[in-house]
Length: 407
Image (cartoon, helix red, strand yellow):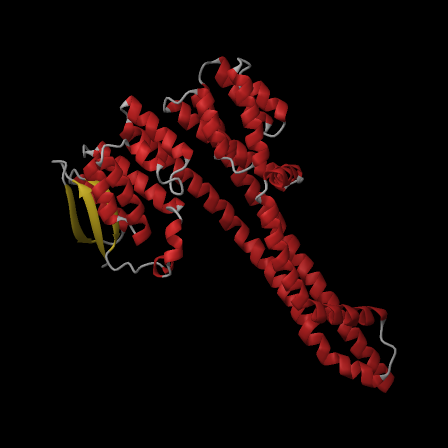
């Protein structure tokens, strides 16, 4: 039976540790909870360090916490504060149990600043690579309102939702991407390796080959000669595109173009709407005013065209025009987003309606991705099969013509 190392806060408010043999992690958590303890973590005792930890280099020290680490730290901090721990003790526990030297260094600097008299929000703001404006804004509002444990709990839930949505989208794209790579590799293998084996036979025969076979031989020769150059050109193109996208004028054009793509554009709009409404709803629910909340939410979108629309809507909302109408004028977010935000404004329930809209848009994005994958996989498979069959058919036709000539 596997062993699990666990940490928990007992009834006296102390952090305790231990090792327990159990069939799974859920059993450990359930047993500790029955004993009246608040579980902070329960991990396999023989868990090996992940490949990412083993390969951590000093060059990575300039980067911040990853999304998984940030969500885990936030959840642990919220749990400890809710269990009655003071902030310094909670931060000390998190620093001591952080996974990886980089995370320990970042969290250690945050704890040092808090111990020097800085607020938690100000300490987090000194690590902008790890903590976003959204994160810092919610923590600042939680400190001001005396609701830091509840705020961190909402923030952890937000980070976990975003992580789940992103993971689902990436997972859905893995299989189609592998199929595309396999299709391209198969065709290049046929044209660059298999076909050249038959070329000497065709040339020695002196026979008039079918048109399809002659075209295939030309294509194979071009592919064989151009593959290294195409690979080099692809690398150069990626570097140039990344440089252009770092320039705001080009990036906003690219982002607008993405939103106009027939099928993918709609998926991007749903994802942007979910991100906007989820961020806005959490900020408003945490006591942040509408205009500052919009300023933070636009930075969480990751699309300059959408961020520009939110910025323009914030400027008009500041003048008393409301939020839903200026957003509708931008024609970027789905109509459902506008309608729900308008209902929220009219009923003075903008935070609740924003969170409701986020749930709807996240579900829509998930369903759209499932449909796209369900459509793309057979199309890619059929297309790959037709191209491979065409190449093989051209070769077989040529071989049959040589047999007819010999007979």
